[in-house]
Amino acid sequence: MSSFFAADCAVIPGSRQPYRVAAQEAPYLYANSRDFIRIATSHRTALMDKQPPGPTPSGSTRASPENRLDSWKEIAAFLRREVRTVQRWEKTAGLPVHRLRIERQSAVYAYKSELNAWYANRKLQLDSDSDEAEGEEAATLLERLRMPWGPGAAVALLALLLFVSYLVSKSWRRGADSATGKIKLAVLPFKNLSDDPEKEYFSDGMTEEMITELGRMEPEHLGVIARTSVMPYKNSQKDLGRICHDLGVQYVLEGSVFPAGNRARITVQLIQCSDQTHVWADSSEQNLENVLALQTGVAQAIAQKIKLTLTPSKQAQLATARPVNPQAYQDYLKGIYFWEKLTPDATQIAVKYLQTATDEDPSYAPAYARLAECYFDSHAIGLLAYDEAHSRVKAAATRAAALDVDFAEAHIALAHVAEMDWDWPVAEREFRRGIELDPNLVLAHLSYGHLLMLLRRADESWKEMRTAQVLDPISQVAAQTWLLNLYYSRQYDEAIAFAGQWLELYPDSLGLHEFLAESYAQKGLESLAVKEYLRAEELGGSSSSRMAALQKANRTSGLRGFWQTKLALDRDQASPALSSYDVASDYAALGDRDKSLVWLEKSYTDRKWLLTALSVDPRFDVLRSDPRFQNLLQRLHLPQ
Image (cartoon, rainbow, N blue to C red; front, side, top):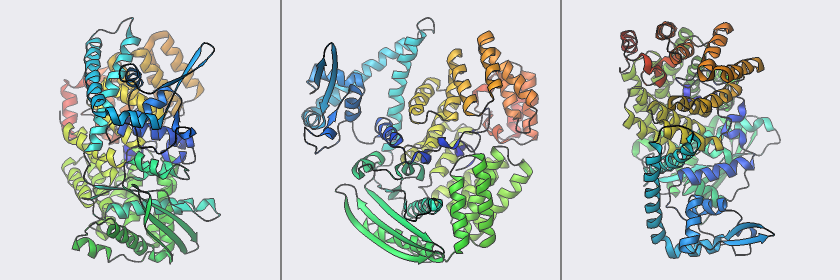
C-alpha cells in the first residue's frame, strides 16, 4: 500500500480531500460477512471470470436446494450472461426455465443440472449467437449515445451504462487472460487458534508473509493472489471449490497458527483445486527467531510439489534465511496489521510499531521498507510536511536497500523517494527493478502503472493495471486505480459504468463516489454529479452544517453554486489540512484561471503530492493553454 493506493488511508492524486473513511471500507474487514463473500463472488464472476461464459460443473441432484436457482438474476449469474440474454435463450433456444404461478403472480426458477446439460449441447451455437446479438446491441446503443442529452437523458444514460458495462467487463476479462500459462495459487487467511483475539495480527501477518515468500519463488511460472483478494474469505464457510473458481487458481494453501510467547505452532496444507486432494501438509513448532527459515521451508516444499524448477541463485537465496529478533518480528507484524487498515489513525499506529521493530532489530530490511511506505503515506494525507517526510522516507528506504539489495519492497520505497523529488526516470527505474525482483508484487504494478499514466504513457499504464488486476481480482484499491485511469484518459462513459459496477461491491468507497462525480461533471450531468459529490462529502466526515449548506447551494444555483459554497467553506476552514491543490481545482471549476494558478503555485511551493496529477487531471484543462501552467508542468518535469 502506498500513497494513493492506500485507498482510504491516503489521498488519490487529484482527489479533493484526504481519505478519512471509516475502516469498514477495507475489504478484509468484511471477513465475517457472508453478504460480502456473496457479493464479491458475483462480481468476480461478472467482471473478471477468465473462463468462457457458461455454467460451472455441478454434481447436484435436481431436487437439491443447492441445485435450484430462483430468479432470472440467479440464472443469469450461473450462466455468466446478462439477464436479457438468458431470457432470449428461453424463447429462441429452449432454455429449461420453469414457472410457478400463484394467483396472478409468476415466478421463474431453474435447476443447475438441467442448465448444465442444456448448455453442453448448445455451447457453440449459443456463443456465436450471443456474440452476434451483443455486437448488434452495441451498435444500436452507440447510435443512441450520439444523441444530445435532453428530456430523454435517463433512457440514454441507461443505454450508455449497459453498453460501456459490456465494454468494461470485456476489457477486465482481457486483462485476466493475459496471465495464462502460470500456475496460480492462493494463500487463504491463516486461522488464529489461540483464545486471544488480539493475536489476529499474528495470523494475518503470517498470511501476508507467506504470500510474499511464495510470490518470490519462481514468479515467471507461479502467480500468487494478493492479500486483499483472499482476506474476504477469512472465517468463511464457503466451499473450497467455489473459492478456487472465484480466484481462478489451481492450488490453495490453508494454514493455522498458535502463537504463545516467543514460540508458535504453524500448520499448513497444500490442496489441489481440481479434485480437492491434499498434496502436502506439515506442522511444526518453532521459536519466532527461526520463523523466516520456516516460511522458506514451506515455500520450497510447495515449489517441489507443484513442480517448479528453482534457479541456482534462488536456491542459494533461500538457503540463507537468517534468524530474526522475536520481539521485532511481532512488532513488525503488528505494524503490517495496522498499516493494512487503510486509515490515517491506523497508519500512525503502524509507524510506531515499525519504528520499534527497527530499533529492536536494526538489520531487519522488511521493517525499514514498510516504515518508508508509512512515512510516504503520512505525507500524502497531510500528516507529515514534505521536508520531514522526505528525510524519513529516504532514510528508511536507503537502509532497507542497503540491508538487502534484492528486496523488491526496498526498491519500491526508493521509487517513492524519487517521486517526491519529481525525478521520474529514477522512479521508473526503481519500480521496474522492484517488479523484476518480484513480479507478483501487486502494488508495484499499480504504483508503476499510475506513474506511467501521469507521464501520459497510457498503453504501458494499462498493461501494468491488467497485471495487477489478475493478481488482485476483487481489490478495491485496484478498482479505484482502474477508475482513475479511465478518468484521466477522458473515458468518462466507461468510468461511469465501471464505478457503478464496483459501487455495488464497495458502496461506501469515497474514491469511487468522488471520481464517479467527476466523470458526471465532465459529461455535463450536473444533478448526478452533485449527488455523488455530496455522498463523497458524507463519507469524508463532513459536518451536518456543511452538508446542509452544500445541499442548499445546489438547490439554489446548481453545480456552480455547489462549487462556490464549497470553496467558501474550505477557505473559511483555515485548517492546516486544507489542500492548496483542492482550492486550485475549485477555482478552475469556476473558471477563475488567475486564482487557480495562484493556488497551484502555493501547492508547488509546499510540494504537495497531489500536484503529480497535474499533467492528466481533466479539471485543469481550462488552464492548459496558459503559459504559466505550461511553465509549472515544466518545473514538475511532467509532459505538457
